[in-house]
Length: 403
Image (cartoon, rainbow, N blue to C red; front, side, top):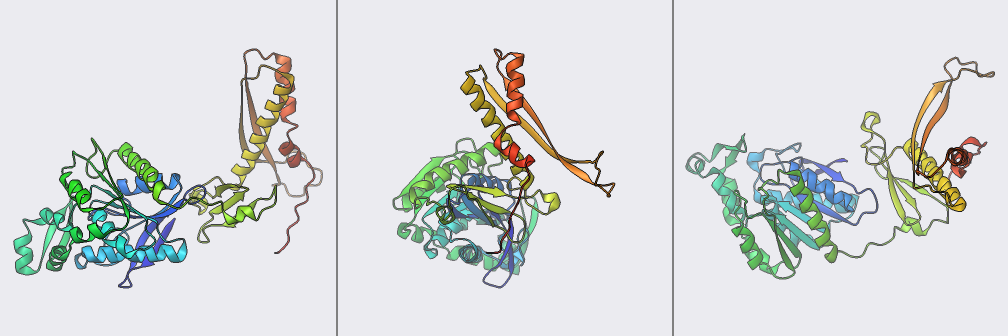
């Protein structure tokens, strides 16, 4: 889901919050690489993969980049750190304070710098991070004389032009990450590729030596600095999720689940700006949503897809129970369903010629070479007797009360 929040200067920063399909294991904050954006491949892939592992992940554009307000020329490393703190405050006020920080390249140095100022953070993971922010100076060393003389210069980075001011260089020279690391009381995971040609793996060694335990290093052998290969991003997310588990509090059962009676289902709005719903069924949590064409974000099945799922699940279970009781050689059951509406062709009481009837097409597949035609026909009859099927066809009363 798209989010916006204010930085320390009152400028609007654009972000995206990736939410997990079930219970939130922890909240994470992702810092992208230098002059990149929240939508760079590595940031989006890692954030989405972490969400699938149960992490709610906020990635955002630093001031002056991507969809965020402000002039990049007026930013520096210190302002990036301030943006991270502003993002953490927004998470704390609107969801939950972050327990995990993830930073890519210069974003890695930024999360290490910001971590001591964020008490909620328990773990920090860096990807291809420099041992000092000043490492990025080599990207515009040719323009340095002009920057020193005129106070600014136009520099091309990753095929795009950026205006770099002297204040940016001055701020980098004042950073002392090496003094922060020995005092950092967070668990740190350093991920770095030996083949990284942008930030050499020697920076990972310096970071590791400076940090105190608990600290870990994992080699991303074969990966490039930007993790352009999809599998590398997914691998990084897998590593971070598994590693961070050790440093996070145990996942508690949602409070809503404990308040439900047997057989009750709770549906709560999870995103008032869209349609996302959080569904609690006993100890299980699901997500309901709508497709983008009707204003949703497609982060879960829509209501009719859940309805079809219920019917399909009940059908398969009922057929399996009957075949098991009869000891018939049924090897596998699958049910494919589709909902649509058809014009009523024969309706005595229908004055509206456009009246339609709801139709669910259900295709039952029974696998079993030893099943005979009579058994298959009987199982087809049994499918029509599943409890959900009967509920849908029976006369129903839905009583709604205001609580």
